Image 1 (spheres, rainbow, N blue to C red):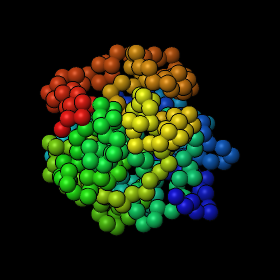
Image 2 (cartoon, one colour):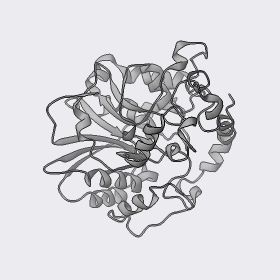
Image 3 (cartoon, helix red, strand yellow):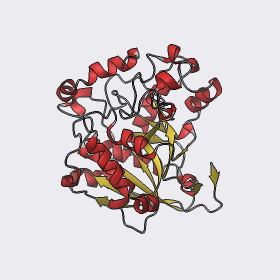
Image 4 (spheres, one colour):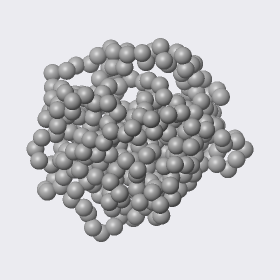
Length: 337
């Protein structure tokens, strides 16, 4: 990655969230603000999937200090008709693929992040990366590093049970060269919105999501990987350290070498609490649970504590069973199709 010479002092950040993730939104942004130095600041665009006025006020109180300005953007739910919408994939999860249309046209480059993250370093310099004529920069996914890990990973016989065991993009044949294509995690991206608008990439992504709505494992993330192909710049792995990174028993069951795995575990820039168990759930053993609650204590949610997993999103268990998700996940972990 080749950085440019100028570093902006105001960082445009986009976060899609709904009311279930109001506290997580507050924590993610609070942790980001804590990384700023000098006169750096954040212009925050919240793609709001129904955050209550009370929780908006709690978020704003959590970010006080003059380093942020906030714009709440409420996309029309009707624009997302025909997509796979569930407790796992709420409508807010699709907002990122239409960020170019939702944000003011004068905004041509942003950092987009999911709300279930914890920043340990400032991502500000990433805005000045040379994207090499690519629409996004993102980090390769840890659990699903390739479109088809079964054919792309030489060590898959050891890695099965620790990585995804089926094709992430259903339209790709296991015999296609695209099966060996690296697969990125869309929970943290540098986005060239000007290119998205110019090439009407958002429309392509929405069409793909609708055409394959019942076959997408990770909704819009699969659409992004399918439609962009290899047109993405690889970020350093420290910029999206997902939960599987801390569960791997060793580098030999991953696509990382030993040095890289040790480095991203010990010196992450951003933690992404992906997966089914989060730090705000009772019993979560993620190594950054305490760091997460330290940031919670600097927000309007101070004094809160872990909750039973089911209570964070009523109906998740029922919806998951209806979608067959536990069985599909078990097949992945066993290495099945």
